[in-house]
Length: 312
Image (tube, rainbow, N blue to C red; front, side, top):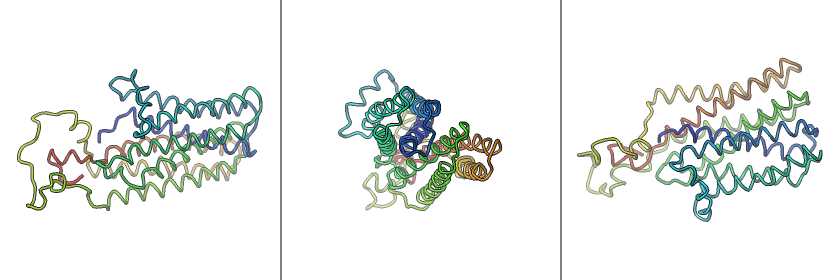
C-alpha cells in the first residue's frame, strides 16, 4: 500500500496524544501526578494538541476535506466512522477534565476515567479500520489492534515522563509505566513482524480468479496500459533489503533508545536524568513514524494479483 504522510502523521500524533490523555486521566486522580494547574495545563494541552493535530492531518488525505463530517454518519457499519465519532465525543470529557483541573484546581476522577476510556476506544477504532480489511492480510489479523494500543501507551508514557521531569516531580512510577509499555510494544511489534514474514499468503492468482482447479494462473496482459489509482495506492512495493533496514531503524529509535534513556532517567536524578527523558520522547515519535510507514508499505492488497503479483 502507498504510505500517505498525512495518515502516518495522524496515527502517530493522535496515538501519542490519546496515550498521554489516558494515562493522565487515570494517574492524576490517583495522586501519582502533580495536582497543580500548571502541570494540568501542560499535560492536557500537550495531549489535546497532539490529538487535534493528528485529526487535522488525517483530513489532508481526503479528496474533499470539507466533506469529512459526512463520514460520521456511517457509524453502524464503518470503523472509520466510529473512530471519527469517538474522537469528537472524547473531546467532551477531556475538555471538562482539563477545564476543571486548570481553572478550578480540581482533578476529577469521573471525567479523568471517561477521558481515558474515550482515548482507548478511539485508538482501538483506528486500529480496526485496518484490521477489518480482509483484502489486506497483513492488516486483517489479531496483531494490529494490540500493536496500536501498545504504541499509543508507549509514546504517551514517555511524553508524560518528560512532562513530570520538567516540573520536577518524582516520576519513578511514570518511568516504570513507560518502561513496561515500551517492552510490551516492542514484543508485540516483533510478534507482528514474525507473523507477516512467516504466514502463508491468503490469496494467490489461482484463488482470486477461482481458476486454481484448472492449473497455474499467469498474467497474459495487464488490465491497463498506464498507471492508475489502483496501482498507485494498492500496488506500492518496498524492497526486502530496504524493509529490513527500516525495521532496524524503527526498533532502535522507537523502542531501544526510549527504553534505555528512560532507564537512565530512572536511575540518574537531576539534569542528566531530565536530559535522558527529553531525548526519549522525540526518539519514540521518530521510531513510530518509521514503523507506521512500514506498516503501510509492507501491506499487500488482493487487487494487485490482477496486475501480476504472485501473492497477496
